[in-house]
Image 1 (cartoon, rainbow, N blue to C red):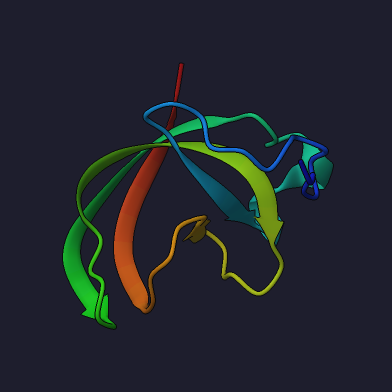
Image 2: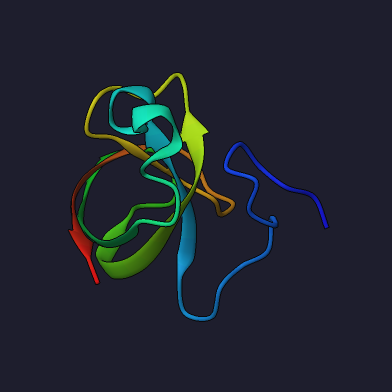
Length: 88
């Protein structure tokens, strides 16, 4: 198994999507392991809209992402408007 920027194994966790968090909110790896609740409305661009609610796990950094953005560790494309918050 490979590892990512956080040193976590690059494997999926049950019922959670691995996400990369933007550089400003990465906080020098302090965000590693953060559980997040993600909600998408399907507004944006691309062929694979983010719609509905997802549970995510911060397991990497997205250096090119803007503040507030997450990059889903799944196949897909586009830029989608989402909201997210930290959860237990």
